[in-house]
Amino acid sequence: MLEFPKEIYGLALNLEEDSVGSVLLGESHLVKEGDLVKRTHRIMQVPSGPALIGRVVNPLGKPLDEKGPIKTDINMVVERLAPGVVDRLPVKEPLQTGIKAIDTMIPIGRGQRELIIGDRQTGKTAIAIDTIINQKGK
Image (cartoon, rainbow, N blue to C red; front, side, top):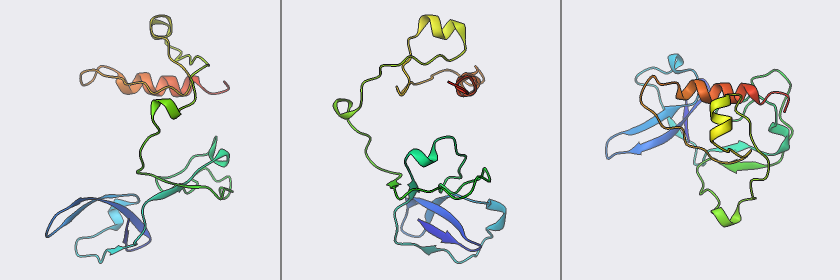
């Protein structure tokens, strides 16, 4: 992790001999050319656990929903290996996307990973957002 001025953080991605490429995890308009950037000597971690269910957070896990601080002692490293197929819990509950054509032809389980592939401007994001919205109250 990198610390920019004004408490803005970034994630180092490209390490070159004479430069470092990073992703800003805050307001980019506050970062100027020539600003002093420091390494934090930490790997990016975010809060985890049941306290995050239903909360809206920024990329660093800080709450944006004005519901107060997130009360959890669990922090997880962001860049870690995903558990193997054998180690994952089985998918037992169906997930309804709210799109009848998808729900009738493609069985999707709650908690299952699903890849949406398609050309540009074909509605991949719309399908994902509609599915997320359809989960409210379920």
